[in-house]
Image (cartoon, rainbow, N blue to C red; front, side, top):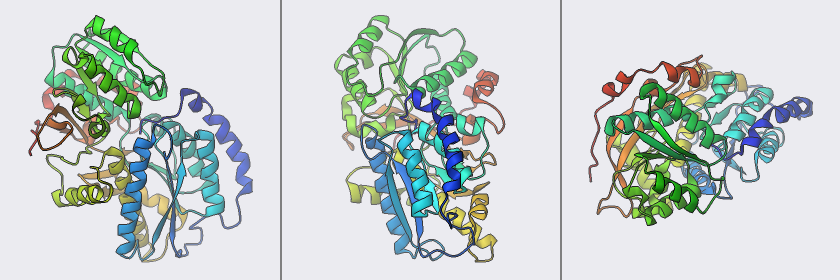
Length: 446
């Protein structure tokens, strides 16, 4: 996801990787899981996700989805005849802990693949470890665009989009439905994701609609529970738009407190990550506000590629966990789908033989695999191409929480920074006619 690592954690990454290089000599004999291409008795998959702390509202649904899908795979005979077993790691203790657990999973547990992680700080630390330890690694949820823009890896791949398309799509939607807005305030968590996502939004906004007044840039601490100061300030300033790329318990509290003080009646909110909060905040979030799904992840997607596949996934999750799947569930489903497709591709390329680590990693380059709503392709630089769905909240008698209407599904290529370019530079080349070329909006269907 956006990542829960503090900004300071990101600056420690080089030191951790440097220490890791020295630790490479400690690799246990036979540390390469597929080195000889021998078919394993079982596929062990290390999965880093938040199981404690405020981010567990994302991490636990991710774990639940993995358990559900691994059970389904095993009931069908496994992948290429091999059963799969997840080994979960809690991201809650921080990036140092995750780096240590990554090494343990490879060197002691002998995992064949690793899914890492929700935190962008953890992904930034783990991507170079994937190459150092030569262990195929799927970045299943973290959002930072910097991973594949700043470096190249042979063993790390992202199975979903990054921050740039997620934030750009929300801005384009705003420009389509509220083109005359003149002022904006931002209330974002004060750490790397909150700052970086605002930089993306502001850079694109200044390119596509120069002259918008930034009324306030407010960055409450990560994990804040009281937003009275920020709400009071925004109520006094009366901006046309309030942007918040916050998430989790922070966003839930902001929504409830802003609702209590009628802020939603004064400004249009744009919340690119709020799909995952809808079921928790219920109808405290009024109709008429802009919400994103960090991809095209919505159990009521208006035009899924395979409606039956989406329905099976959504209904299975709801029957098992008494909730509709939220975007971490979809992201985990995509990682599982990519793992299965990649292994099957590598096995087929070897004429039925079992792939080495290098052969499996090579299979992920250019891989296209199904998601619950569409399909995802991993580019040659390791970045996944994933469509983006943005809509407007609507209250319906059918659900006790807001649903989305007037949904636009943005094709991945149209909002993703091209290979070899930096988002900060590419966003400055956009032209206002992008808004005129947006796909048709689709209404909520009960």
